[in-house]
Image (tube, rainbow, N blue to C red; front, side):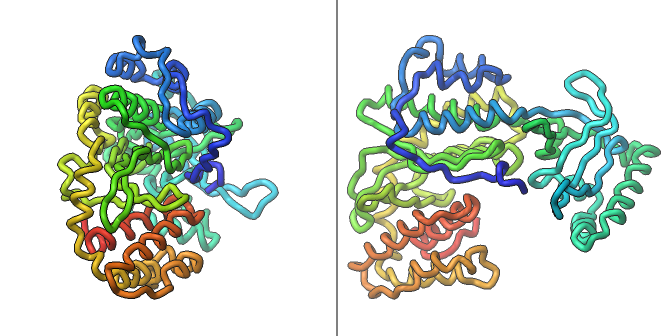
Length: 416
């Protein structure tokens, strides 16, 4: 996949951040969004548009999202199986190849159009092939240089679709235009709702601003952000910390995510920000059966817009939970054996099938033995913080957070 479509961790540079943004400017991100009016109504934006949201690094994330919505034009078309050809095409001046979707006929809004070529992105190729249970087979043909045979199979099912409605399916094809090139982001049903990184960021920041106004003294800081044109993850932590015994200073945080073409259209998840000296700290993510009554708000892609705004009102319940988290941390018994926890983390990242097994700088952090006494638990926390500070691909960093969370909080690995 081309580098520009990968979700990347953002560098949060304090020297280039004012730490605030005018609400009117923030909402310019949703100027052309289909749910703009509903957002304005829910948050009464007209009455607060001249106010400023003070959250550190909010302006930097705004600029990045504005870059994506300005330079990447996302839209959808409808097409039937009988009108689609899929084949491999060489990249000019390179040994690389692209998988091409050629839409011989398609519907753009309410206009029938012809001949649109799009380069397959993300999981779109596999989604198409899954319809015929031939994903593994076709991918192997592409891999061994037998792309023409893969196309022969596609053509076979294409002809069947022309002659039988049972094989001819209309699907929604999610496209993005960038620098005069069209890419296929994903294939979904027509009852699939996509809200986008712009919607998610604006709604998230307005929700936090509403909470700050209702609970004077609460301040927020964006401590982590990873963005692409289709994905967003930001972690926003309370600036003021509280003592959590052996865990040191902690604060509650909310992880706000969207994946236009993956699991969960909108996710708001409670996390614990464990602070370390001269660092933003690292994050512990509780399981669903956490002591926190409302630890997450997950809105799926099949949720209708009118229901989304009803659900968003529940976000208040996942904020201001530091005291509850401290109670949960104080109940953790595994901290009595810090070296056993270290070994469990190390074995997980070094297992033969682990995505981390070749990342020696990560293994090196947890290789150093510590005395198995509760007084040395702080040393394990320092290791976890060093792991958080590593520059890893976003998907790996997120997976690592879950491994560390499960071992530290529960002494084992997540099973739900």
